[in-house]
Amino acid sequence: MTGAGRDQDRMAEAADWVIRLQAGDLDGADGLAFDAWLQADDRNATAYDAALAIDQEFETNAAAVREGLRTRRPGRVLAFRRPYYAAGAAAAAAFAAALIVPAMMVSTTTAAYATGTGEHRTVSLADGSKIDLDASSRLSVTLGRHERQVTMAEGQAVFDVTHDSRRPFLIAAGDRTVRVVGTQFDVRHRAGHLSVTVTRGTVEVLPADGASGQTFRLHPGQRLEHQEGAISAQVAAAAPDQALGWRSGRLVYRDQPLSIVVADLNAEFAKPIRIADPALAATPVSGVFIVDSEDAVVRRLALLVSAHTVPSDGGVTLKRNETPNR
Amino acid sequence: MGQTKPVSPPSSGPGSPAGDDPLVEAYLARRANLIRFFAARTGSHAAAEDLAQELYLKVAGRPPGEVAENPAALLYRIATNLMVDRTRGEARASARDAHWRGAVHTTIAGEDIAQEPPADEAAASRQRLRQLVEAVAELPPQMQRAFTLHKLEGRSHADTALAMGISVKSVEKHISAALKNLTARLGR
Image (cartoon, rainbow over all chains, first blue to last red; front, side, top):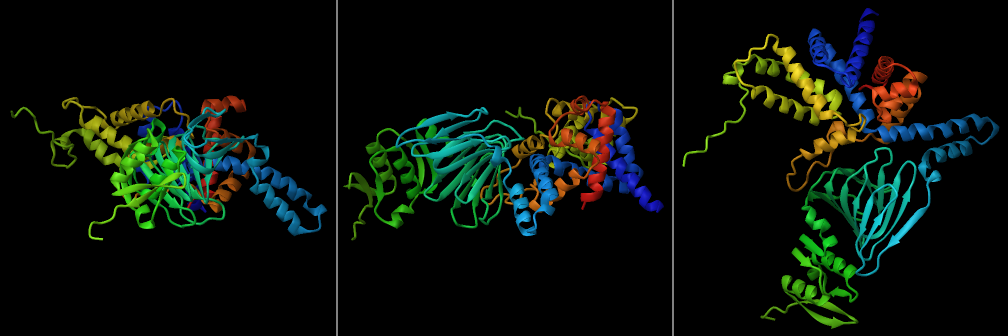
């Protein structure tokens, strides 16, 4: 009993220290006293570490816990009403629904944005965030009270997100969700291929509801690539230029398949570019393209991958150059 | 031209000249405790490690000869100034900011980087999140209010006191009691 009482005291002291060290009027004497307390008994450090771990866990998950507390209340009201309804299962279902549909109910209007071929557009949102939309992109934005939700059907955009830890910024792109608190990053979601490049802050990419896979936390200078439907994703280092160049009329690639380059160019130009065969489509491309005239860009691209162009069906088709011995 | 002097890396071995400095001795003996001291405020272990490293550079770089009467007291004075300086003006509970600071120091080693976030950054699983929410929901009302305002909404102790109409000391007591309760319930 005495032992348990002492452990309780120790836990209380540990919690006191965590909170005391976070106080605004901390001074050097507090540090010295803290050090003395730690040295007085080895178990004090263990208790402190445990309290600190819980403290940090709540800080890391502050927004989610707040949200959980908020949505917990309607659940309680339903639970009180439950005796009036005979079917327990139905009541349970209503209860679950109340928990699962949180901020969406109170969400404000949804705005849709789209750009045509070759069109770029900057969208300023009411929360101060900015979205630079690349050509041929479609997305919708809902600024809710508890979260900011973007659905990116197709396209590419650079997001400059205002920091608001109470309202996470979520981007749904196929079977992945990109979650962010405040930062700058590029999301490219075209033809079932997702790539996310972070230039500032931290971004999480997680499987959408119902999809499986790992959650990744991306830091500045990292890029995630994911093929829709696949369980895996790859993270590699990336130069921000690579992702953000399109805003200044430059497309930057490092070891990207020709098919991705052509998809990007097709977003910019009216005349469709096609690729003659899958092997050519998979050819890796590295380089910077100035997006000026379509003919000039296609000519430079053809040189890079040892191909030539033939007119086809209102556009051009890239064909591999014949090898001399054939 | 032989003008460049070799710069020796900071050495912490007991045989190095720095080892004779009582302040450096005090630092080396207390490094683990100093990281604990910093971590309460930085929100992440990585950021606390960075501060401890910075403190070392400050301590080791002091001109020799100044003999402190109580090296440990001086050490914690410098540590406190460094920490308060570094965390000033940043809302508490913006733990994510702390992670950002930590993240900047992450070296990017080409392919295949840190798929697993470090333990102290990990977002909680759904099940764990439910436990966290339940534990807070079941705190006594005053504790819950103080804990929510400060920890979850990021208000300072002073702001929380104002919002609740009680003293700052009482706020600290409530939050501390809440943390004790939560640690006893959720600690692993």
